[in-house]
Image (cartoon, rainbow, N blue to C red):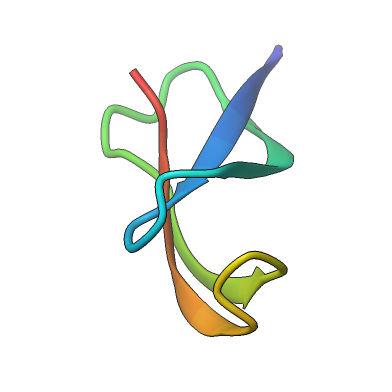
Length: 48
């Protein structure tokens, strides 16, 4: 089964995206995405 996670921008800490990942995966999701507040591509990490 898949789990819904929220992605947070590393620079401005805004919650911009949601994503799905497998529940059995132990590592945190890290994706480089566009942030509307920063107006550039930044690293987005899975929230706690």
